[in-house]
Image 1 (cartoon, rainbow, N blue to C red):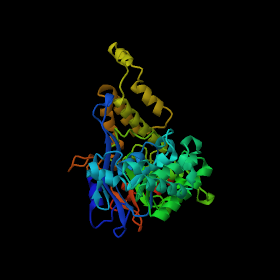
Image 2 (tube, rainbow, N blue to C red):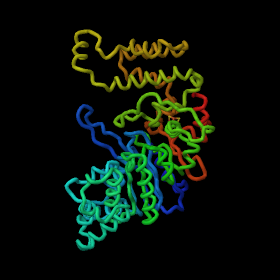
Image 3 (tube, helix red, strand yellow):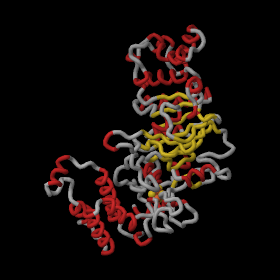
Image 4 (cartoon, rainbow, N blue to C red):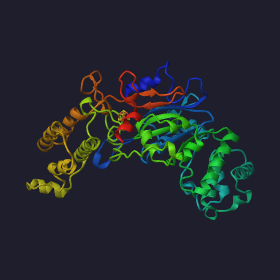
Length: 467
Ligand code: SF4
């Protein structure tokens, strides 16, 4: 997230991201980053799994976290309960920044925050009885006497809909749904206040999913639990979550009350994600938005908006506003191909072919341009830029061609300052969107199109026109 965005989040006159100031906030996350250091081929370039997110979780609520696989949602969940170390930023639980805890303080705090995993088997040791598995956290924390521990575990088995006799059985004797109940019982042993549910029903049959979801809702009511519910099944999220955060490439693109966000998405990425789910009301059906390309590597996120390389509502320079949409997609694809080509390691064979003065099997620039544009009706002014950039790519390399394409077709979405035509002059940083409040409930969206000072068309209007 840009410094601007962080400052916008931190200002006292603005409500914090996705909540209001008078809420009973349990968890405050500010500019949280979790990076994995680079190894091997790419040297020191870190993978930015979580790249500067800020949000609050209110006591007793269920916050959903959705997004495509690889967007960083599981890493974010694991970082919140310190199974992963944060690279930067803060996670405050009831005012205490837990990223600074260690040793006995961290162990003591861990009792308050637990995790339920997608695959219950990963936490169930087949050589231990159910009683031993569920009791293990109590043993680790030396909780009361062994007799009281056994009693507590049997009560927990009752609570999650299993039987006390199951105490002496082994995991392989249970179905998938029952094993997830065992995992949930184990999570509850230390009476946590906050639980990260990481795809807790994804591995279960549909018929069993509802049972486990109902159990989680009952437990929340009985014990006043606060949940972060990570899922890719949006219908489950819609059913169980009070609010939803939509994640893309390590960033939160939109966050707000569930029903409102599902009924009237604000961010272009939320639009595209929701357009993929079947609409129960046929009269409200919207066309599916097909995203071109693949998500960029979190090792090399784009400048500006993280969604800018695929966004169907990306802001265009005014002179290309009416350019044919298919041609625009091809221009985007060209830029993606050049980016990847610049990063790709050429094979030894390609290098030898180059040394011998032969074309590498990498595909020539002419081939790439031909494949992308031969079947399109390219206006003369665009063709001129294509010819110029093909020469640049061949003579000076992909970066020179990319820079020229960015100058011509780039916009504020990709970090270009619309006033100067280049990057932000004051900071030298690419311009990133800010969070804009898009409804009276405090729902927020990370997109330039909501900037009231810029007079951009709203995302839904642009998406309707371009699809
Ligand atoms: S800032 Fe908004 S319009 Fe621009 S690329 Fe990002 S999501 Fe799309």
